[in-house]
Length: 169
Image 1: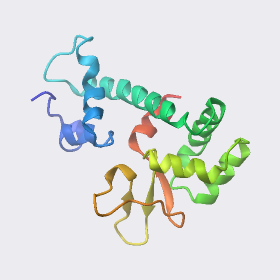
Image 2: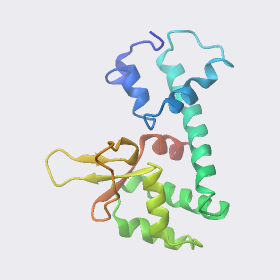
Image 3: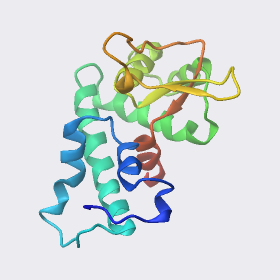
């Protein structure tokens, strides 16, 4: 096994890692990319897996910020991430809470469009807490015949990778 099994993972070590990705093959490539340049022992320890996870999240957010630059200025991208950091501890968030936070940052763009982009990039997802078991919807989890469409009536939560990224900022 590439990753040492450890009860700190609270389940499978592979599932633990996958939960922080967008389920794309390139995410795993990006996650394991530092193995070539670093002196990690195989199987990877829990500590080394966390180290790789932190490096992965930095690279992932850099990629996403680059993709967001097609729609937003660098200044607005920074403001969007500042808002996400500011509201991180208040999840789940309503549409109005997110819009108000983004409006306070004086974006050059409509805050609702920013929320749609964040959803489309799976940085945020919807959470439906109407039943005893909450359901979570992220764009990257959509099925071929069942598209995942943003629902402004539901609250929003952050993807696990965003949680790590924002905790480090």
